[in-house]
Length: 209
Image (cartoon, rainbow, N blue to C red; front, side, top):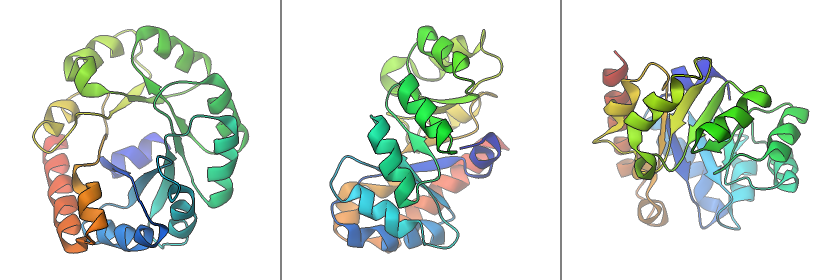
């Protein structure tokens, strides 16, 4: 994932699907709401097949979330993922993603993690879990000695506070699941998801303006 992608897509949905058949309708619902990027997690058995199906959906950029191992990097890239996201930072996972030619967005929670990110040549990271780690104030403090890095906060981010994160120059995008809640996906409420996506995009663009 590159900075221009984050700048173009300021809201990155974190998706959990329980059935692979949900993947494409969900992707279409997000596209209808103006969101053209998805992080499909490997938290369920359907995640990998969901990535595979979404990789063929025109206009959608699909990444894999909850990538914990080198083997999972290979699995998701082979399935069509174009970026990988992890809850923490693993040099092995990052290097494997780099070797496969896809950006890695590892989770960081400390300056030590950021030192590791710099040593791996990364320019952007996921800040997770943002809400429990001090939110925007913590990102502002951490970013001071790491001027070349950008942050995508995730965890505890929602419509009510995304503007606080996006007000920081080092935060081009936020990540969250409020517009793709599992209950909405399982109920097939695609129109509601589209509306929530449009609302999220509008709020993010207003915050960045």
